[in-house]
Each structure stands twice: as structure tokens, then as C-alpha cells.
Length: 425
Ligand SMILES: Cc1ncc(COP(=O)(O)O)c(C=O)c1O
Image (tube, rainbow, N blue to C red; front, side, top):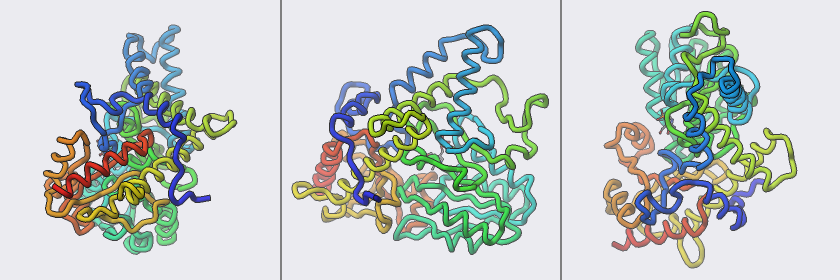
């Protein structure tokens, strides 16, 4: 069953979950606030922050052989295995670690464009600058043509046929994000990959999964792409690291490495056990949600079930935010509010909405929300991060609203009440 309108957690579970996050409804001064900018950095899971701090307390180098060092090494090894297996859904390939998700994307694009024959690369106009600029930069450096897939303003997504129409025998890379960080549209990656590979069967394909991973289980093995990245700080975890998965064939490409390490090792220098421990805490949290709904004992299955439930809860919150209730009209029904790129069915959307308020600049609206204790994000074309994307959707800007699965329907209703107040201002 698709649960087109989603499926809410029971109230007790939702309350128990929100307790697991820092500053979920108060800021650090103790003032009440609603944090609806989780796409810019999500609420922090207490266990993830604490796991990072615990590991940072230890002076031991994880590459020594005494007891504590070996334990830290185990944290790195188990973390590597579990991030690949649970978060990216694959037992194959290799893990790339950097300080940010952007760095991993530049690294993956560099490897492919520097090593794979071809005369052009294809990227979607909706990409975050970390992938769009990486493809543009290395196209320029290697003398390749940059081809840009347009977006459909009605859905905020990329059409698989349009994407495939730009691919030919001379394409060395296709890069399309898994979900939009501005509209929440989930790209039909399965069709994009299938149709693109009909044009070139061994095409290298990357996907930026930074915005999709916190909302939905990934399955890179099923998708058959060559690389994907995530940002732990947008995934209930910590800042200061970016993780990417690369396929076996990308892992074997010549890359910067210590000469004596195995060919598929990307880590340069001593690993940071705290980053792996922190991501394990995120995985554990998702598994706990899975265990609430299932008697499964296999951790990978629990992770999948947990992510499926997060996805359903978020869809139910999105439905409430768009449609509202008899007492409280949703965004689609408040006169003076525009929901942009609203054409996709909810089963193809993550919990992100791009909206506008008639007669109000995006930046002013964001300030008005803040005055009323609501944090949302200004995605106007004055921001270099948003300009290309919003203009591709025919907009000058949008207010990005991104709650999280642990929010309650009452939080959505409060946001709607504040929105109604702004419209009536
Ligand atoms: C879709 C997407 N990709 C990549 C990034 C870059 O992440 P980072 O700042 O960790 O490099 C972001 C950050 O906003 C994003 O939204």
C-alpha cells in the first residue's frame, strides 16, 4: 500500500523521538522556536553528538595496536561497513571520507572526468553548486562540453527522457541529485539511470543524495550508479565530515592515496573514529524506529523499516502542511500563499516545501517568521546557492520550509497559524 497521505507515528512515539534531539523546540537561550530549516542542517540527535564527544576524549591513535587503539579501529571498520551497508544499501564499492559532502562530490567528479574517455558531461540544472560546479569545473579543465538538463517548473523534477536525450556515446558522466534541496521533489533515478544507459550502457552516473538520505532508505546496488554522497549534519548527525560511496570501478581509478594502502582506500591520514561512532548512533536511532514497528532482529532490515516509517510520517506531515484540517487551512488553501512546483504526487516528495507569500519579499517573510519564533530558509536568487535553481523553476525565490520526521502535527499547525497571520498582515 502506498499511503498516499502518509502514516503518522502514534503520539507517544513522536514524543519519545523528539526528546532524543537537542533544541527541538527551544533555542539555546531557552526561547521557544520551531526549527523548520532541517534541510540546511537537521536537528541534532543527542546520541550522535555524545558519541562524537566520547570518541574525541580519547588520545589513542586508531592505527596503533594497544587495546584502546584497537577498539577505536573497530569503530572505524564497523562504521565504514555499516555506512556502506545501511545508509548506501550496498556491500560493494568503497567509502570516501572528506570534511564536507561538497568535497566528496568534487572528488568523485574529478576522478571520472579526468580518467574516463568522452567529450561531454551531463548535469541537471537543479543540482546544488557542489555537484553543478564540480562538473562545470572539471569539464573546463578537461576540455569537455557541459550539457545541462532543464527542470520541469510544475514538478520541480527532472524528466528521465529529457535527461537521456542529452546523453550520447561520448558522454563520460551523468550527475543528477536524488531529491531537490529546494522543492523536495524526489527524482525518478531508476528511470533516469535506465534510460541514460540505453543511450550508453557503461555510462558513469553520480547522484547527490545529501537531501534524500535523511528521508528515505537508499539502495545504490539496486540503482546501479557509480557514486553518491551524504552530509551527516543534515542527517541528525554532526558537522565536519562528508561521506560518499563509490562503485568498484570508480574505486579502482587512480586516485590520491598512500602507496602501500589497498587500491580502494581513499582515506588519507588518520581516520576520525568520532565521525563513525556518531553515524552509528544515527543508524541505531533509525533501527530503534524500525524495532518499534517490527519484530525483525536483522539490523539492516530494521534500518530499512525505520527509514520507511520516517518517510511515511514525513509524508503525513507534508500532507497536513499542504492540505490542513477543517479548523486550519493548509498552504494550498490559504489565499495569498503559493506552493511552488507542487505538481508531483506526495509519494514522490520529501518533507520540503518551497512557498511564496504574495506581496512579500522572501527575505522579509523569513524575518517575519523569525519574529514569530519560526526558522525557515531564504532561497532567493540573491543567494549563489539558490539562484540557478529557483530561476530554472521560473521563480525569483522561495521560502524553504523543512520540518523533520520527529515534529508533531501540532508543530505543523503552529506553522500554518503563523503563515495565516503573515498573509493577513
Ligand atoms: C543537495 C545538497 N548537496 C550538497 C550539499 C553540500 O553539503 P556540504 O555543505 O556538507 O558540503 C548541500 C548543502 O546544502 C545540499 O543541500
